Amino acid sequence: MKPTPIAAEVVNEVIDAFGIRPAGKATIRELVKIVNDIEGITGQKFIRMEMGVPGLDPTFVGTEAEMIALRQGVASKYPNIEGIKPLKEESARFIKMFLDVDVEPMHCVPTVGSMMGGMAAFMVVNRSDKNRTGTLFLDPGFPVQKQQCLVLGHTYGSFDIYDYRGDKLKAKMEEEIEKGDYSSILYSNPNNPSWICLNEEELKILGEISMKHDLTVIEDLAYFGMDFRKDLSKPGTPPFQATVAKYTDNYLLLISSSKAFSYAGQRIGMIIIAPELFKRKYPDLKRYYTSEKFGHAMIYGALYALSAGASHTAQYALAAIFKAVNSGSYNYINEVKEYGVRAGILKAMFQKYGFRIVYDMDLDEPIADGFYFTLSYPGFEGSQLVEELLYYGISAISLEITGSTRIEGLRACVSQVRREQFNELEERLKCFSENHPIPK
Ligand SMILES: Cc1ncc(COP(=O)(O)O)c(C=O)c1O
Image (cartoon, rainbow, N blue to C red; front, top):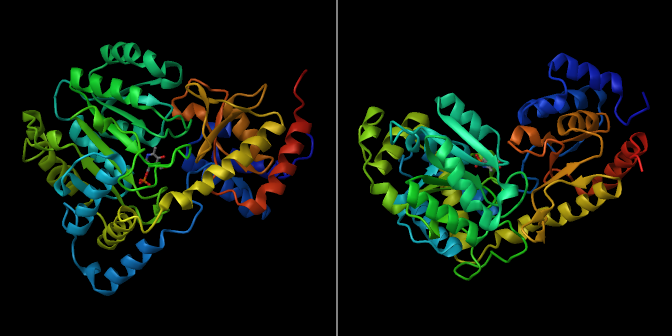
């Protein structure tokens, strides 16, 4: 074996001890453990691209508000499950300012991150009709959401949306909906991992399909406003973050503070329930909850059972962050734009050494530079490529675990790669390409 930047014996030993071969078949958190173990033994730092952890400081207004709330003693009090008043009010304002959609504070409810928002959504939507318990995922996607469906005993289906963009989407959706007993559709926009951004035409198709087939759309906005090709940062001023909420009455929005506000550690997000859906009655919900009303079942059934609300101080933090961005005194996009800049540099570097971008187009435009990008290398399947790159001190996840049909690919996350590491990455990629020459 040719020498590699990380000692091959150590990489082999750690992967064998873990017992998953190729290592690219592992989940995100399993890969984190494998890389931590290799770093621990060798003392060498990896270029870590496997997990979507924010690489920026938390939003200052959030941490300040949280500390004030803590000093005022909120830690001893259970927070209201519906959420504290200022957070509900600023959330509704945020939805108006940045999506141009009208909801009332009552429709905005805090969750322990969007992870819990997803879980609660499945627990209510997929139980609202006893004959329909499934979610149709527009893949590629965030793998753990399927895990949530599995642990709840719900069924799911999926297809890779990349081949069905634009006007091809309608026929494909109709075809897929026929195949399963679905009650919900889920996608993220911008998309983790491919970074495609569904446009107004596509969201209109999804909205119309949702109304026609009575399906609830769970729109995951974990990367809110992060299509950096447009300036989505000005409150109350177009363009707005595109949303299905313009095209259907039957939606749930998952708003995460993790990436947009670098607030992942405090596990705070919001679920926004469409006003029409909030008041709708589903007799089948009574099998699980005290009320047949959707909004009531969500709050006093699902969210109560899950955690009885979201951390009190984190709610104060998010209320303060929303207030600052809604009033225009804090421009959050200016902070996270850094990810796009890094992505541009990193993509060019990988391509220089023979890698290719897998999801390379967003309809007729090149894919935007954002939080993730996708890569392949001639002669490798994604999960093997993930394993091989470990010997070069680079970690990523395979696209296979995201429901992608592009199994040759992997997902790389830019957030944790610091500019000081660029030279080291370049040396490692050079070594990789010399050890794996591409046949002419
Ligand atoms: C598409 C998507 N949804 C949800 C989440 C989870 O968000 P949160 O940290 O708010 O639970 C992530 C995090 O990576 C994500 O990528």
